[in-house]
Image 1: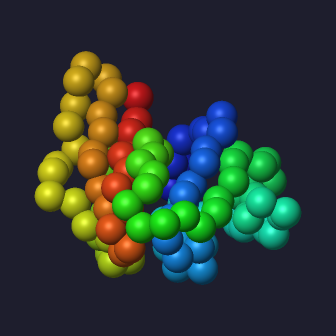
Image 2: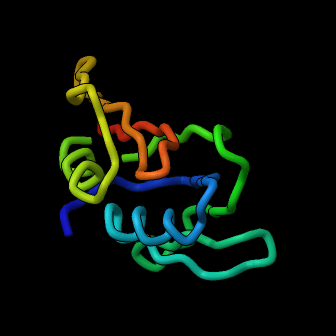
Length: 107
């Protein structure tokens, strides 16, 4: 799997947690384990955040650029924008299959 970039911590809030586990696991290779507040997100053996269900319309998250954007669309997500570059940093605004908005970035 290509590099998607390191994360310090990530909080993922979605209306359908099971769908998010499927989608984000496939896009980024994340693994999810149950915890008392929802799920822990693990990437390359390191816990990088948490995931839990929320009401529709809550939550927006910045994540990791062009390859991630391609995988997001291939897995049922959407984007209307190309990756936007500012100097050496790039980002794209996207939505997961549930319509939750987030951004992928690199740089």
